[in-house]
Length: 115
Image (cartoon, rainbow, N blue to C red):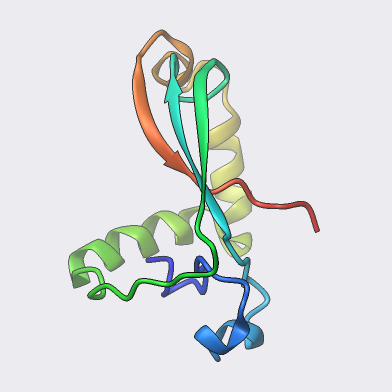
């Protein structure tokens, strides 16, 4: 998925020649292991940053059904569909509890740098 959207864990554009031609390229040089108390990550219990040191690790591409699912979600919130998507996403109480209620878990986060 990262490779598909040119988000590679490396600062060296030579590692992905396509990356420099995409406006969505965002080099990722570290990942954070985050333990949270709610899915929105408004209550983070701990965070441990792991530096990647410019290394890349090639993996097999995601399965077609996984790419299709991601594309469907991204298309829903695309600029072209924003007029239909935003009122649904912004409505009061729309699954807010799912994201804000207590739910302990862990995730891997790429903290993107400000441009």
